Length: 157
Image (cartoon, rainbow, N blue to C red; front, side, top):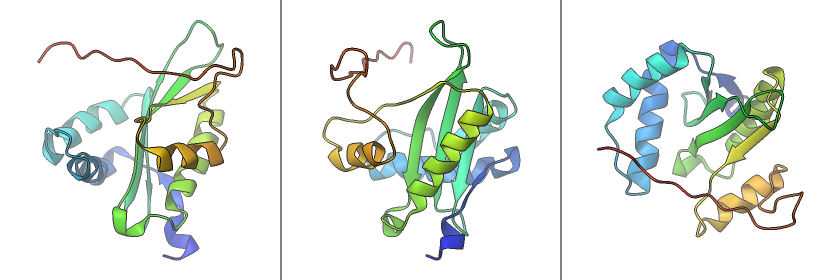
């Protein structure tokens, strides 16, 4: 893939079907339930219409996406971003596409006044942890020097 193909851009509402297909593919690759591309696209059209969610795409045709949500936080003047998902199609990994998404993610967040970007990674996914560390993210809390952990609990059906 050429450097031009690795360039990332901000997705629009018109890209909801493309982002949804990539997010669905991500879940399928890792044997995770998905409501299907159509349901994801419907949700994305609503979410992308609001300023608290944005998506990025990379590749021609699009082969990678990042989905980000923003929220206020008492510890920061600006919003905190959560990188909900970052996905590059398997056959196109290790070509700089994920790095292009991360660079645009950081630029987009900085432009929005974001003061912290959070990312959740499964403990067994050491390659992904190394990828994020190469891009300046830390598994250790700078204030305490302790490893960071994430807990979750799903509610409802």
